[in-house]
Length: 123
Image (tube, rainbow, N blue to C red; front, side, top):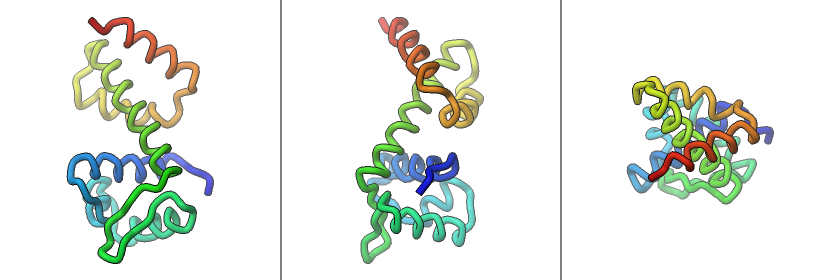
């Protein structure tokens, strides 16, 4: 399965929801991403078929290692980019929204440079 931006968003949402709620179902993803139930259902089926998630008999979603890796990478980028933009004086809401757009397309080289810069600013 070729992972596109929307797939990364789904996996990241599952990770965020797991951190916030402890357990995640498809309906939680529907609300988090403001999508339709059928859209999320189709995506979850594809993720299961491709080994990114598994669902138990009660509908609870678990990220499998490949899905966890993608989700962690995207979420880490999101948090760092949000922080970076806020350091530049951007409001938290705008910084988070912009980070969502940047996290998928920013090159590894640029991300590494931003990360090094932000790390130097730590007290």
